Structure formats: C-alpha cells, structure tokens
Image 1 (cartoon, helix red, strand yellow):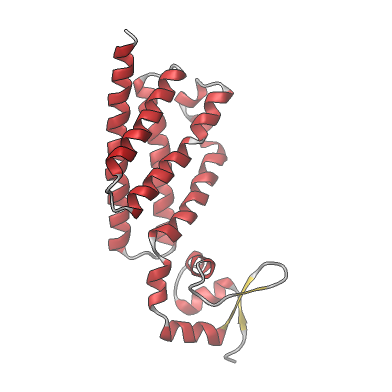
Image 2 (cartoon, helix red, strand yellow):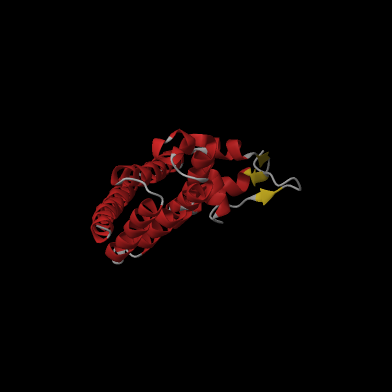
Length: 208
C-alpha cells in the first residue's frame, strides 16, 4: 500500500538514515511532511519514495552548516543545563551574577563561529579577538586566574565540539564535510584562546 502513513522513525528506515536526519530535513522544508493535531510528524509512503527518487540532492541542501547549527545549539543548551558546569572548579569560585555571565558565553562563542563559517573565515581574526577579549576581561573582573580563564573557555569550546560531533554523526553528514567543520571550529577557537591569554596578560600588566 503506497499511500500508507509513516511515523518519523518509519520514514527514516525507508530512507536508510537516522531519525534525526529526517527531522532536520522536515524542519528545513526539504522533505514533504504532515503534522497531526497533536503536532506529530507523519509521512506518506508514496511522497517519501517519490522524493527519494527525484529529489536526492535535497539531502545535501538540508545538511548545510546553518541548518545543522540549530541542532547543535539545542544540544549545547541541554549539556550546559545538565549540571556539568557545577562540577567545574573555576565555576565554583563564582557568585550567581558571574555564573549567569559565563552561561551566556556559549552564545557569543556560537555566534562567532556562525560568522566564521558563513563568511569563510574572512572576519575570523577580529571576531576571535573580540571573543577572546570578552573571556579575558570577564575572568579578570571576577578574579579568576589566567589558568581558570582558559579552563572556562575550553569548557564551552569542548561542549560545542561534542555537540557538533553528536549532531553531525546522527545526521550521517558525509565525512569530508564533517571534517571541514571540525577543522574550522578548531582553527577559530585556537585564535580565541590565543587572544584570551594575550589580553589577560596585557590587562594584568596594566594593573601593576
């Protein structure tokens, strides 16, 4: 029966991909999807088969960095809210105001990365410097050492990298594309770390 309704997981099995991939393609409008009154995604078998035959390139379009990054952001927020921050020694030294500021750090790091990816790195140097300066000045303001300042940044950097790996692997992103993204992330965040340490040293010297 070609017109039977499929669940998200059934559609994923039919296409031979992970359910997260089908969800992403659906949300981007690349794959025909219907919503029930309860908000569940449903797919017509005939539409899925037709799409698979005639619109194979839509898979590639659905996997552009901007689409994937929305999933990454959700994953980063989930990891940070799961209490991982509370276990960090540098985080335990902060008062509530400072903790709020640091929780917001993931946002500036992510936005900077998006700028870097979307401009092919053309604005990377100034963006990396600005984020590094933000981390360094905040650490000084809350009396964290340069080691703790670096640890704080690396916590958010590693959380971001882990989320990218998780989302990309679940979406079956081609190896070359995933490798290119990992390389961009590390190139960009290495520049931030250098800026952070350099800025911290300059701020420290200025106060002596």
